[in-house]
Image (cartoon, rainbow, N blue to C red; front, side):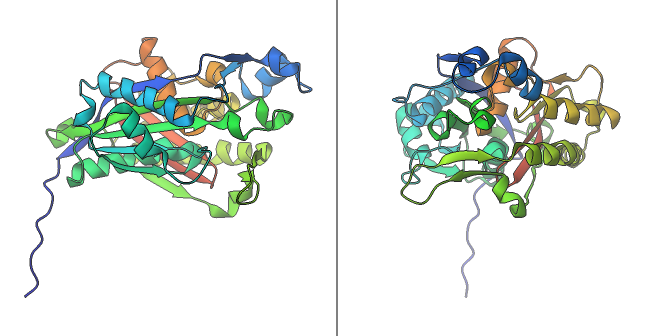
Length: 332
């Protein structure tokens, strides 16, 4: 007779309990970049919307930035590090593929033997991680999950390549996901995710195994894909959550390019989103931080009073792979 296995007792739902973020202190302006490559402040602002970005010291490891953001999120959730039993780090910029970032970050924060793993879906990584964390909590595999999007893109940049050095930056953002006492209290909607592997050449690291490669991006092709495909993904996430576009209070897309953000926002408003829907524009002073950009933007908007408890937030990440993901989240 085959024995019956005992399932883990899950939660009725999952919700975000706290947020945190971290950025390097060094601010790099457009004028500083113009001293090295053929560009200027006006050219950068017009094409990508960036005024400045944060760049880490070469000696600062990615896991240090991630741990700082994670510690702040745990504190914001009102928990101690030992309350967190799992950690997910979304990143595509670790200097080496082994070991993973998550175990190192967990130890730096003081987590007690957590389940720890990395995910690499580039700029969609935080949304992937948030969805996985929600499923872990609801399934009973974890009670509190720390999700961190962390990148040190400066390590992989060719600082003489005008197409990339003006865009990318460093930073980390984090959220703690925990149980909701009832389904009515659930604060993380269903994950809408997918990929198009035929588009893999558009954003990638060019280099052979054992070599330190450099980031390459086909900017115009990525722009065309994002301005046509991201809005439908966002609308599916709203529908899966049982909501309508007019229910969204805050839209937080991946901070890739201000023109992309504006185009997607215009499409959402055409589909019924309110004119007073607040839209993240953290890229202006943070640059494109890949998997860190969505939680960074949320934490900065909270600090500025632009997001309040109970706000309905629409998150959409998209990037290398090409991979994409989105969900609706209630702000704690």
